[in-house]
Each structure stands twice: as structure tokens, then as C-alpha cells.
Length: 493
Image 1: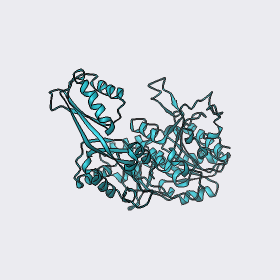
Image 2: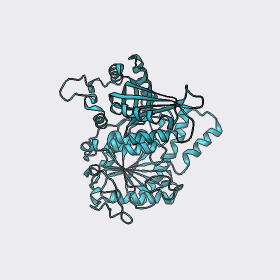
Image 3: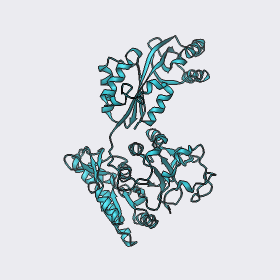
Image 4: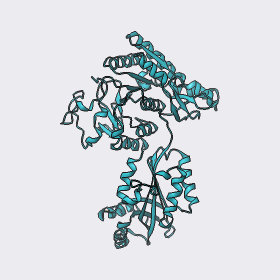
């Protein structure tokens, strides 16, 4: 029996779940994402994370303890990650700054981690009163190894052997979030904002947990902040990649680094409120990870790491670049241009706008479209030149697009630096650039595209995955065409 998280098989054919308050629809779900890997058996490990608002005072801690006891009673091995109480971390930081405007980084990390240590101890006391055996762990004892950077450390290894021993004794493991031990100097380090979420997902990945539950003060993920937009709708199910885009756009329910980690290791997440029993938002791995997530035993998962992962380098030789020179200044000009592109069903790959060299006060707008669309777009824009109001239209059909696919790339300066160093070494000048958390696109001359691809693959150690590899299955994305190239990117390990 699975009491505290969502059992997908309990969702009936009409899209409802018996625990929900009233009928809950799951519009537009891809059923492939809702397979048995997200249904927990009684023996499946659950990792629960409780934020500061969930353990803000004694009453809140007792409420959390009761929920933990119920989950354990249902038969689940349980790891609990806890944040500092309420605003403790901010208060400690303010206190340190009041003593020194630049407190030593190592001492500051040691100070800030005391908040979580207080929380885990108080929770253990509350569980003891309910007759639930538990053991507390600092980040160091939990086996979280970091790169040693104070204030914003990244996880480089997880060795949870002490937690496994605790679970084998049928005790609840209570872990202080937000912290770890440096790899070289062995000093305590903090993970930065969202560090407790990252701790929970890292342990879930390392232990092969069936679900990572993140408890907060909201019912789940909404289409907008419900405190600002009363009509905001709660999202019932969302993919990890989509949630990452939401986090990158400003959603603060789950930290982007936590989602990158979950996406990398296929960890399903359930965001829900610690103040009620309602179903929250399920954040599920993508279809490409279906075969990998099948509730492996909790003891045999390999250690997890938190580092940028570059999965693939894709190329598209069929790209056209169009530049509208001297677009007249005025509200709605971009809407006119993109409305025209929509009318001719052209797919815009990249776009950039800058101050015009052809008209004072105007703009130059450059667009990259797929090669087959190039002539149609040029004809449509030329016909609308007077209506839109631009000086000249330049067309270049000798453009190629190189795409770097992976996780955590944009937030790591070394990835971007290595990419553009490799392009420079290959003599590939960049004409357009577009970046997201999972993809960096660069437009270069088609004549140097293959050299650029080889250089970038070599720079990121991906030579074995390229089209030059031997064997019938080694054809790269180039051979599949641009539409299949995107599909290949989602399947990269």
C-alpha cells in the first residue's frame, strides 16, 4: 500500500485519483510517461524533503513526524532530508554580516549548516516520542562529497553506505540538507540556494528510491504564482525537462539544479504540501528514460554526481539566414514579422535583434530558418517590405547550425568557454547564438561546419558518439535530417 505518494495505477481510466479532493483530470498526458515505475510497492524506498516552512515550529515538526510515521507504517524504507527551521539560514547570514562585511567562507559555511543540524535533531526527538526509531546524519556522514567550493558547492560523489546500514536496521535516516564534505580538504561546504532539494534528489538517485517527495507550503506547481494570480491552475503532471524550463523562467517551487539532477538520473519527484493530504504535482522522467527506471533494489544503485553533462553535438547543414536591415522603429514590428512567418509555416531556429547600421533608430533582425523554408520566407518578406518598413533584406543560404545538447550547460561557464574555444580553433566564426538550459545553438558557415563539429566533439570527449564511429548504428544526427536530429538528442545518455 502506498499512502503518502501517488500510485499511478490508482489513477483510473477517467483520469481521476481516489485521494484527490474531487475529480482530477490529467489533460494531454502522454501515457507512456505514466508507467509502473512511478507506482510504489510497499518495500520501495521513499526520500522525503521538508522545507523550512514545513518545520518552522514545534507544531509543524510534530505534523511532519506523524506523516513520516504513517509512511513508515505503510512499509516503506524512508530517508528524510530537512531544511533549517523557517528563516534560520537568513538570520544566521545576517548575524554573520553584522559582525563582518566579508566573513571567511569556510567559517560562514560551518555557521549556516547549524540550522539544518538543529532541525534533524528536533525531528528525531519528535519521532522518538511516536516510537519511530531514527538516526541523524550531517551531509558529511550521509556521504555527500562536493567540489569544495564554499557557498555554492556541487556534488561530485555520493557514498551513502551509512544510510544503507541505517535502513537495514529499519530506522528512518534523517539527513541535514544543504551541505556536504569537500573532496580534497574535507571541509564542510554548502550547496547554495535549493541545496536541500538537491540533497534529496542526489540521495534518491544514489539509493534507487521509488520516489522523491518534496514537501513545501504550496499544493504543487502552478501555471503562475497563486498568491498573485488567483486563477492560476495547478499542474498535475509535468516532465522534468518542462519543469526545468519553468524553473529557468523564474518558478521557485523546485530549484533548477535539483531538476537537472533528477533529469540526469531519472528520479521521479512529487511536489506537495506538508499542510494537507492532497495530491501535488508529479514531475516525471521523459520517455527516453522509461527502460532505465524499473524500481531497482535500493542497495545496488551506483553513486550519483552533479556535474555538467554534454550528451551530443548535432549539426544541420541546411539552414538559411535572413537579415532585415533597418526595420522601422515602432511597437508591433516583431509581431508583424513573426506573424508573416507563421502564415507561411516557417520554422524559426534562431533570432536576434540589434541596433541598425542602415537606419538611425531602427533595428536589424536576423533569422535562421530551415533551408527548405528559406526561399519561401525570402519571397514573403520581400513582398511585405513596404508594409513592414525595412531598408533591405539580406539572404544567406550557406549557413550551418551546430547544437550542443546536455544538462547544466548554460549555468557552467567552463562549458560555454570550451565550446567557443573549440569553434575558434576550428576557424568557425559564430553568426547567431541561442541558448537554453538544455541546448546551445550556434550558426556558422556551412563550409566549416564539419570541422567545427569534430573540434567540439573532441573538446567534450564525444568522438566515439559521432558519425565517424565504425559500425552500422553509428550514423550521427546529420544523416537523419534536422527533425530526427532533435529526436536523437533526447535519447542521448
